[in-house]
Image (cartoon, rainbow, N blue to C red; front, side):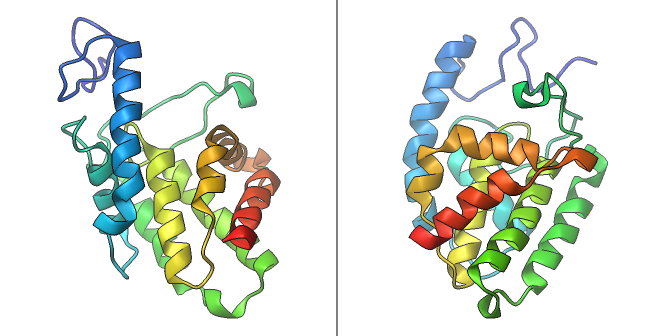
Length: 202
């Protein structure tokens, strides 16, 4: 099946900039999203951490680049991961994304985060964030959106996280999310470690 997110004549994501060169689009996306990423906490504020909030973050960060920013993806995705030996994480089917997100977010919001210690907080938070990331609600930009959501949620619930630490170690964070989303082989310790460090430094 042809990917409707790509141009018909080149394997590049359709974008509002009209760029059909993959490397040029990657650079433009990095520059533009860096600007909006730095301001997203001021622009997107809510005490209700639901799917609408998650979609709003994605739309704000990517809205100048992609027409589908802030929209749930409509096709299944497969991404070969080096850290998994070329295998892919089993992401949610498009028809199940809304249900899966709502289920995870309901549990996340049901925890009493103010009464548990830092170790328990980091371990529990790791599993919720990894589960949410594994849903992969968007065609592109899931890690940046979900980590932004996570840091906003943490601050609202009394355990602020050091966003600079997460940003400066973005590749590690993504690999840790992949390892924590590998089905029966999921390994949470890498993600727990950096989230715990971020909470301690926050």
